[in-house]
Length: 282
Image 1 (cartoon, rainbow, N blue to C red):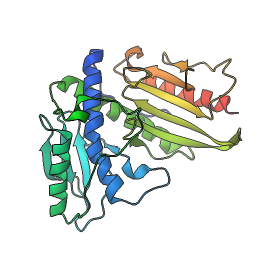
Image 2 (image 1 turned 90 degrees about the vertical axis):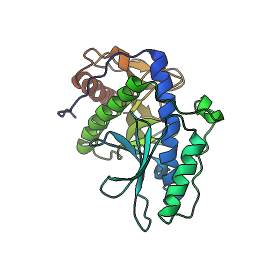
Image 3 (image 1 turned 180 degrees about the horizontal axis):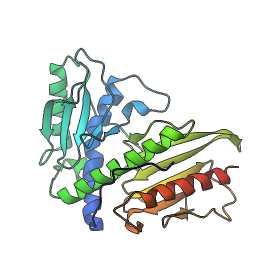
Image 4 (image 1 turned 45 degrees about the vertical axis):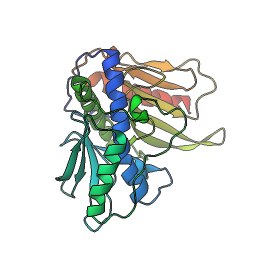
């Protein structure tokens, strides 16, 4: 699972700056997710609404929309710019979301898509109550004031995309790397042979920008089904630890990176955590 990674150094940022930037991005990517949800066929795993990460342009990218002029919706996180890309990744149209509402973003996107022959109207996805609240949901404007924290998240997703892509390339039965608009996490799911307690066994490896469990970015590896007997838990590398409240998984918090400007500690954590999760499911 080890592979050379072009790692982007991530500096220190205040928790409040990271939280605000994360929530701004979480709401902004709903524009991208809505296009996939509305304009592409439903998939068994709901991946029609998922996003990917474009390493070359450092942007979130949605599903390919098979219109008369095929396109994708993309979001540049460090500038909060939503874009319509052609097949070559060239912007056909772009909107700076700074000082715009989410509703204004949807209005703009629907107008632009109508010019491309799209007849359906995009609307925000609906989620359970655990979707994080923010003033944007009540009509507040996006605000580009947290530019350094926004760039930090771009770097986190860029680093993680490389790490997970390397894992997928060498791991049988690993799903494509996807970003899920509900929890805004980037992950791959590795299906394992057999069942446990009647459930198919799998291991999820991913990255969360922060949530109710940890109010900061972190990497995680989760066995499924969660083990009933959680003692003893396998050892982990890279300052990782086992989370056992409400869910079971290995966690490496961004603030706990031993060497924040290198990929090796995160790679070591993911490798040992993946091995440990398989042991828990054996």
